[in-house]
Structure formats: structure tokens, C-alpha cells
Amino acid sequence: MKRTKAQQSRAAIERLYITMRHLFTRGAYKPTGISGESLIESLLILSPEIYGYVADNEKIELDGLLYIMERLPRGIEECRYIRLISREGYENSGFSPIIPAKRKRNCYRVDEDQMYVEMTRGKSDIYDILTHLTFLFIESKKIANNSMDPKSGTNLNWDMLEQIVGKEERDEDFNKEAACSYLSHITGRTYEETHRAVEKFESSTHTNSLFSIVYHLGRLSILEMREDKDRQISFSATLRERVGHHVYGELWANRIKSVLQEEDLLERPIHVISANLHSVMNTIYGHQALDLNTFEEIEKEVMEISLQSKSNKSREIEAYAHQYGLIHLPDTSGTNISVQLIDTGKMIHKSLIPGVEIPKDQKKKPVLLVMDYAFGEQAYECFDELLKPFEVGGKKIPLDVISASIMGKAGILKGNKGDVMIPSSHVFEGTADNYPFKNELKKEDFEGFDLGIFEGPMITVLGTSLQNRDVLQYFMESSWKAIGLEMEGAHYQKAIQSASKIRNSIRKSVKVLYAYYASDNPLETGGTLASGALGLDGVRPTYLITYKILEKIGVFS
Image 1 (cartoon, rainbow, N blue to C red):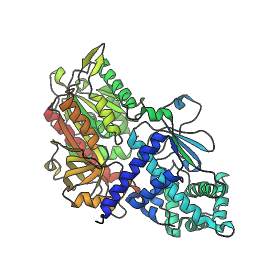
Image 2 (cartoon, rainbow, N blue to C red; image 1 turned 180 degrees about the vertical axis):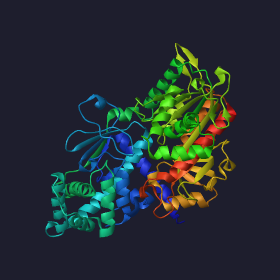
Image 3 (cartoon, rainbow, N blue to C red; image 1 turned 30 degrees about the horizontal axis):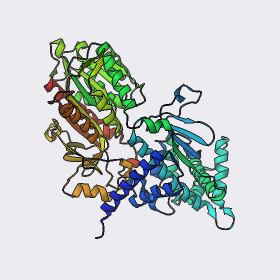
Image 4 (cartoon, one colour; image 1 turned 60 degrees about the horizontal axis):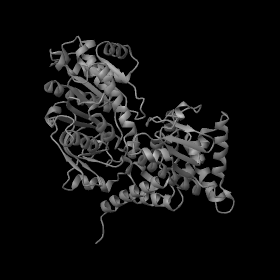
């Protein structure tokens, strides 16, 4: 019986992860060796939407290249050896950390050929970066092939690009129009497409130029083909020992609980919120500090603040927040998840937001524990550790968690960027793990705000960069009737259910609130994450979801 394209794609995803797990356990592999070719073959079969032209033999995927270069350390394209490490002391060394623009992690350029990349977010992060690197190696081989002449070695366009990059490195002037022409031949794209991509890379301050990236990717591939100078990806022994053991999640959670204890907040009612830190702070303290008394007033002011983070109003709100209950905990654990504790007992205002009164009894005044976004499986690691009782002097003190709210951005399957999704369950892709739950947020809570609202099951995927049209259409059109995809929902719910129903470390009646806003539509041409940031379209649903979560918290308090 012939398999459908969706079945072939899902099998390719499974092969990718099995191979990655095997390579991680082994400790090292060559991207163009047998193991690396297995990853490449599976990725080409899958042809994820975010990687566009990856399966084309000549065309380089330019938007996808920018997407991953903003998530990888600057200069990684120049390195033959890439080593994934745990937090191993390099932060105290003389090496200056390189921090990617869109994926906060410390990376270190050890020498001309070696880049070390800290991985502290767990397996999802490792799989994500290996997928990106596999894409890079596919594109580098295409660049090399497009730059080679069967008789004379490299062709004229490559030789001219080499000169351009040399001038760029010496900070000398060069003809940009001519350079784009040479580059267009090497990338297999039109001059117009190439010129547009060059400008996009120029506007990204955390990557090298497209000229430099293409040149160095091609150079390493050519050296490998001609001189057997193989590239290698390796994993440190410490990283392999620590992954899966919640090392960073435990450090993160214990620090939060220690501060709760220091502030005498451990026994107060706690509401955990995973969201943008700025949206919760601006919504609550915007109302209190600026006397904003309707959602429309808050929306108008905070949207302006979000666009101008260093405005006078922004500074006014932040100063007021620190004076009346906000405790900011920048991450020191390695999780890259900062936290804000908001003690409503220190507020002088009677309402949390318009219409939501703060209880008068000091012991009943809630504490909001606001955590920044986790990444994939890291959500389970951090939530699982957070929901455990805090051990002090041999005594276990359980947290009085009243509610857990998850606001995130996700890919939508039936709507547009900026629309809102209300999940009724999380289906974990590639496993038999399905998590139905009672969502305290409902579709009707968001009606009347001129946004598309969708309610139904959501797919928690192994990696957003691995999704293709066939798999997504299957989830949308089959009996699953999925409305969107994201990477953390099932992991959060697994931690919540195990804590409340199995370990009994938090109350069984804990309230759960999930809502997502659409950052992309991977089924829409030009609508993938690689097409660019959501921008202003994401601000309104972010604040609307935040406001609705705070309204519900008022009901629970």
C-alpha cells in the first residue's frame, strides 16, 4: 500500500530525531559523512516550509538562511568545527560571548576554525540547532556546486565574490550592484531576489553580510571536496551527561522559591503565568500608574510603549512597578528564562486591572509569578521543578498554586497572523501523548475585538522548523481538526497534570488557562516564520490575552 505524502513526511521527522539522538549519544559526526547524509536525506524528503528552496538542486533559500543565521552565532559559517557544550565555565574565561539575535545563548569563537555553542535548554534546543546546521550544510554544497567550473576549478563569479568579501573585510568600497550580480549566479536566484536579501541581511545587526556568509559556506564546502578538510559537529561529555536531568531547571526553580521565601511569599496564593514579561507589567502597572481605566485606554497607551521601550511612559511604569510589588529576577541559571514576581500585597491601588479588585486580607493577596517563554521540552523541565515543594531545613513547603496560564505565539492553520487560538487539548506530535484539559479561557472571552478567534486541539510539535504542508494539512483536515501548532503546550500540561494528579504537590483544582496568538501561517505562501517578524500585528493580541488572563485571575482570587 502506497504511503501518503503526510505519512512519508512524518516518517522523515521520526528518522531525523532517531538519527539525532544516536549522534548525540555517539558524541560527534561529520555532516557530509554517512550519518550526516542520513540527516540531509530526511530533511530533503521533508522539505519544511520554513526552508523554502532547500530541496532545489541549484537555488539557495535566502529567507530561510536569514532566519537561521539570526538564531546561530555570528561567524559560525566560517568554522569547520562546531561543538555543542553545556555551561562549562567559559562565561568566566577571557572569551567574549557571542549571543545570537533571536535565540539567547552564549557562544564562543575559540579560534579561527572552532565555535562552541552553549546548550542549556534541553533536547528540543539541541534538535533545533542540528536541524538548522543540516540546512546550512545542504546550502553550502549547492553554493560550492554553483561556484565550480568543471575545467578550471572555481568560476569567475566565485573569484569576483572572493574579491568582494576581501574588500568588505578590509572595509574598502566596492560596487554593490556588481557584487549582487555575482552573488545571484552563485545563489541561483534572480538579481532582484538577491539584492532584496542582501538588504535584509544588512538590516540585521547580528549577522555577517550575505556576501560573507555565502562565501564562507562555499569555501568550507570546496575545501572539503578538494582537500578532504572535513567539517565536524561534536557534543561535549558534560552536555551528554546533563541533558534530561533538569540541571538548569532545578537551579532556576530553586532561586525563585528562595526569593519567595525571603519575601515571605511562599504561603500566599500564587498564579504562574508564562508570557511576555513586558505585557503583564505594562497592563497591571499601566492601569495603576497612569490611571488607565478601560482595556481600550490600556491598549492605546501600552501599544505605544511597546514600540518605544525607552519612552518616558515606559520608564515611569517600570519605576512605579518596582516601587509597588515588582521583583525582577534576571536569569542566572542558564535557562535564559527571566522571571518577574508581582506581590499585590505591596500595591496601594485597590484594583489589579480595571474591575478586578485585590483582596483586602493580606494572606489572600495573590502573587503573580511571570516567567518568560520556555523552549520546547524545556517547558516541562522548568515547570516540573517549579511545581515541586520547596525544601527548607528538611521540611517540604508546597506552593499554593491557584492557576497556571500559558500565553504564547504559535503557527495558525486556519487563520491569519495576529489571530487568537484557544486550545481545548494538546496533541504531542510523534507520540501517543494527548492532553485534554478544561481551559478557563473561552472563545467568547475574545469576541468583539476584531480578531479572528479559533478554538480546538493544538499540535505540540517536535520542532516548528520541521513542519511541511502535507503534515500540517493532515492535522488540520483529518479528525484531529487542529487549529495550530506550537512547541511547549503538551510539556507544560504534562508537568501540571503530574504535579496535581500524581505527585499531589499542588492542588488538584488548579485552574489552567491557555491562549496563543498567531505568529505565522505555515500553510500560506510567504506566511512562514522565515517571512519576517510579526511586528505591530502581534502587540494587540498579546495585550488582549494578557488582559483576559488577569481578568480570570481576579475571579479565582
